[in-house]
Image (cartoon, rainbow, N blue to C red; front, side, top):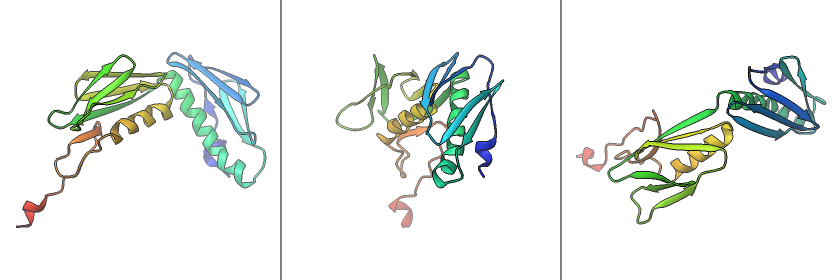
Length: 179
């Protein structure tokens, strides 16, 4: 039995939930999210809580029970408070700028890397080496942050590259340390 799926979701102040068939729509101060849950899962609003049920104890409904509840919880938190990821650019000459609806990064390559900012995300750069990604959809925020980091992951000898704020990169000593 899913322990996560059985736990009810508390509806936070300022969040409106509407269910139309299999489509769950949530509105809050940070934005609006919409998601269509699987057929084998049932979602009901009871007062100030959302209950998630499954149709049977077969494999697929059991697998989707806790997942559906977690996704709905993330939606409630997202439309109320939002999500944020911070990135740091480390390296001499490694900089970034925001140009319109895209982010442009110079990361030690011959060309400038340009990525379009997805709809619904707010990307800011307080300076040239720090990136803040904010939005109400947890998956979109995390995915875009991962795509930016993947452009130049921190390398293990000098630590240059794009990393999450607070990420610790363990540096290797290099071949000079062997003598």
